[in-house]
Image 1: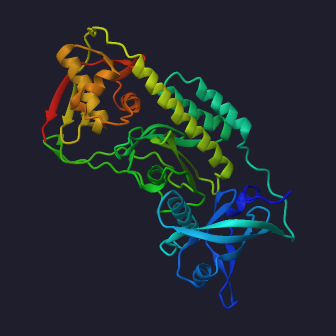
Image 2 (image 1 turned 45 degrees about the vertical axis):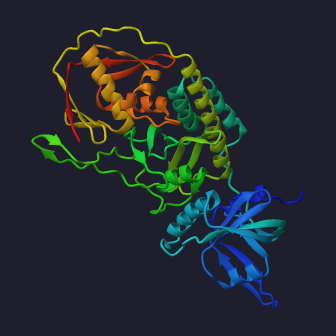
Image 3 (image 1 turned 90 degrees about the horizontal axis):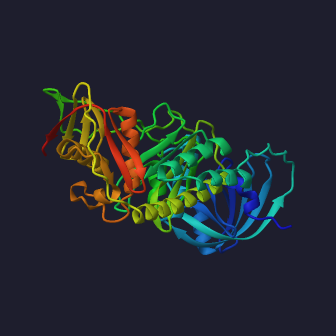
Length: 446
């Protein structure tokens, strides 16, 4: 059987530098190392273009080259006859290679030196093994169809979006041994991604935000392509957000409040996979490990399938809930007891504080404030998603607002930081706002 690129994919992890041989028009050969050979598809690879070197000049004059790659576990070598097609300096392939190169550079102590100028795409015309002495590979960590099937079964029984995300993260831990993972959701308006579910961290980090293009997560969202890094890298890492408090007569003003990102302090391997519903970006699935080279191509393939399935099911759940929303029942809450809970809202960015503790901001903060006002002004606790969508004060994006994900974020944030308040789902597109202490609301104008 002829060799295929798929069969030798571990050779493209960047653990061992590849060698490229090119030839000038006058027949002068040139051999040099190359930082990254990237698997594109069963017929193509992409090579990192970093310097205006003799190799680059030769390729532009004579598009044929030979690349030798080495299996990182066995030492087996493979010779690829390739034909240069084009250079991409933007887009998903470029961003993916840029992130991976950053990991290789950091591992080699060359951060700031390895700068990707472009991704040179080559057609692979033949593959031949260079026979020599190789060793047997260690047993591969299982990430096959059986594990994928078990995880998909969990997803298929999820009753709602919250259950779907929990089933995904629980399935990764149970069937793939991926202990540290999280899901971030966003919207089509280009706003920040926010954490709605996580596993394996001391703090859940629900509500922590990432900007598009920031780190592995933001890059995967922006490029809508999986990003996988096998070595620690500062360029695509995350620092824990530090809360900064300033008090004027006991009131915090004028500062952007942030929730600490729930990342590993020493993350050696990271993978981020966009969650898509058709072409619409819903969010990002992110996993990491303190182990170097923890995630390979098999894990990447499995997570891409799972993320696609989650995106499709999430869109269907959204349509189902929209179609079956019912009017809320008239409600009169039992009188809360205990000391009054002071709630402050800063109109500038809808930041909400309970006592001196920061809760949430942005759209989720606007939703919480509406629920609080309805309780205080109308003694109403029953609500529908439709009601929130139609309320102009919440300022939901016109498209793909991911309202259900924002409600999950708010529900879990309240459970962690303010148990006196709570959100309880009561049906499709319906929920109850529970208040367990008397409220004292204060609004700080812009």
